[in-house]
Length: 177
Image (cartoon, rainbow, N blue to C red; front, side, top):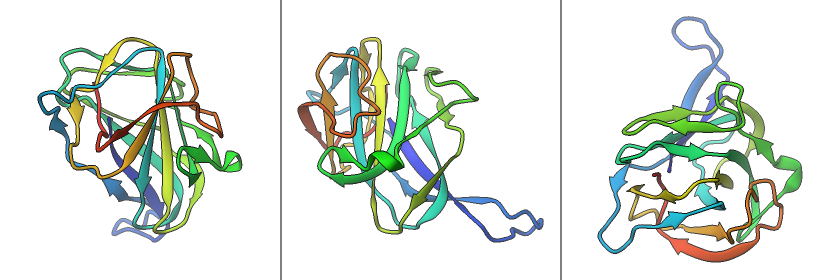
């Protein structure tokens, strides 16, 4: 689902602007592998990503590149991870999309969140939490993510939970609908 995390780099670019976005983590979108299709319904997914560069602002891109249906995101959060699926609650930020808490990613498309202020140390782990209010199949994925992701039980939006209610784990999944 999440394709890329970018952070703001505060040096003037060639046009004299002092905002330039650089990628600190990304992955290539792939169709799901046979036998590995994940389905979510009224659940939250907590993805853990390891950054390269640090920064003070972040935004994410969510991909539905291989989706056959629109991807509905009911809520999204980003925070610094402390351990396993837990986050530092003081770092938790709601992600908005054009000022809205929810978004729909069209078929074979991508959306970018609005930027949020967040101190991100270089070489740190971030947690990206997404809530899927509707039945969602992860048809866009990345089989070689080499990271553990966490899925809540079917109890609704857990994106802001410091102690994420883990119902199961997924290894090497990271993409979309």
